[in-house]
Length: 212
Image 1 (cartoon, one colour):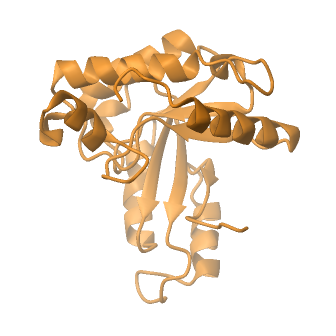
Image 2 (cartoon, helix red, strand yellow):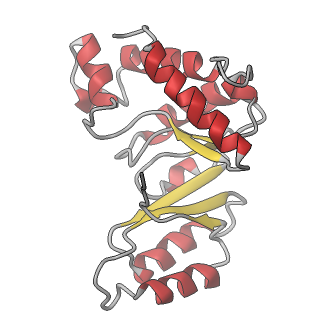
């Protein structure tokens, strides 16, 4: 429910963060999802208020609800480590969302500013779907990101050109790593070569690997 913490779920997150820290891993934590998945996202915030998710980025009530949620998450004290999330070096970055379609500069600035006020020593990544050039000047955003489904070197080069002169980090943080190769969709080896040759790319991660 809105403004209610599911303590069982929260403790599962506590454990995940603590376990990652013990192994020297660093986490990117996404704050809201574009999709109506079981773990929640913009559709859940809209449902709580009886509003349309189509207005998620412009409605001030939903924005306030999201910032209240973000505040509760970043201020949470991990039950395994005793460290507030906003002070934990294991969390190196908060991402404003996952594949958000055109949230705009006003919304992105508001969310990024809220995160920076709570966690000034952690980084903020713009969760816009693709690189929004209008967001490159937001001082509270440190990292921008791109997803590729399927991988595409032409689109990669286009995105790289947008980052020139931005003085910001850029992550290629999701891509389909097992799609059939074909122009301009290269083999995985050729894709990695393109990433390494693109100097504006500061990091990459495929989606996804899981195990039991």
